[in-house]
Length: 486
Ligand code: C2O
Ligand code: CU
Image (cartoon, rainbow, N blue to C red; front, side, top):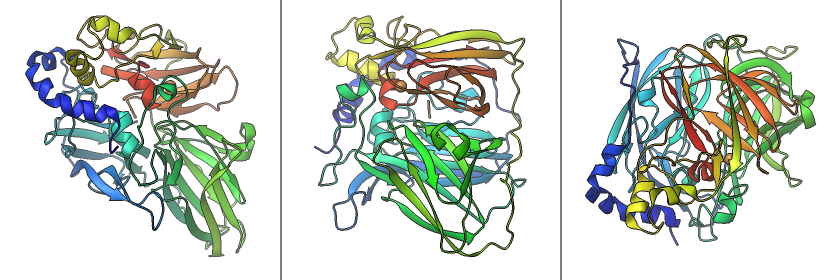
């Protein structure tokens, strides 16, 4: 089987969707504000075209897989200086609808790429122009925001690095994209979602890769300083990033600098990273001939994805960690902030029932496709599942907020599984974890463990911003809502 069932049904429905005409009009409720800084003069214009390509993921001598990528490059990487004004045209070369979402970028809501909420779905052959101010330096990424389990699951994701000229100079820098693939021996994709996964920890891939290879071997000067930008672009897997050899400091989370923390000083000597989360690590290399291994220690079967060997000698041996400049982000006013609490829960199959149609009815399917969700609901936030409530429409917001006000949000996890929770268009400050395991830092995604409550705070920006679990199957089976900021 070449495809998971999901994408076949979506394709089959493209025809049906057109006949349903009116549905497309039912989606967006716009807050009607022009939020683009005027004038927006692009400093860089480019096109990102989603399409298929072949990649040997199973190893040399094994059959290749037909993956999805932007511009025919796996994990297409853009590097732009801080302060850039990026005009990015998304071109849909897939045979199903898609959109482009720039994860972690603070931007005008209308370019956020969430179909029905901020823009219509981009049909095959269609385009959408995003205007993005890149004011925050850091390690970001971009991915589709429809049929994510299918599209991102097959590799559709890219890296956006916003460089800060004020950063300290490292001897070397490497970008490491971690992703697993669900492949059969002939290189074809196994179903990307299964009910047992979607309703629990997710459907895992067994072919583990970094930058599309089983592992990478790198070199750096002895005693030198290496910056690793590590991205978990997997749909499902939570990873415990740790190292052996040399010294390592965590210097940024989701692109945003924090006071360097020695990895060995964190609980268990690892940083736990869910899907969509990124870290920047500063490695201080050992002496000549020594090496550093960076791996995922989550299971007893450690996955050593990078080995860096010390060769020659650094021209500028230094002491202590190299800190990045502190982030220049709106600081929430904690005393005046309004509070909300959201509980992550298991849910029933409410969405399909709410539509009032049998789940196998083509109209029900077309409607679920237009909302870019699956046909089953397993998860909810505060007893609401996406989509729910009013029929054939985007549900009401989880919260209403005011532009420029500060909010404190408690996220409680009542389920038996961890959830990486992401808020679009903002960088929030992670204040506390009830398990006491997190340093205070800025992020756009926070992993909430079973039984844990995490508190975050942010200054609200105008628009409808989705708030969802980034285990893609959880998001597509209900664990998503949005905040309306006016
Ligand atoms: Cu990485 Cu809703 O996004
Ligand atoms: Cu989840």
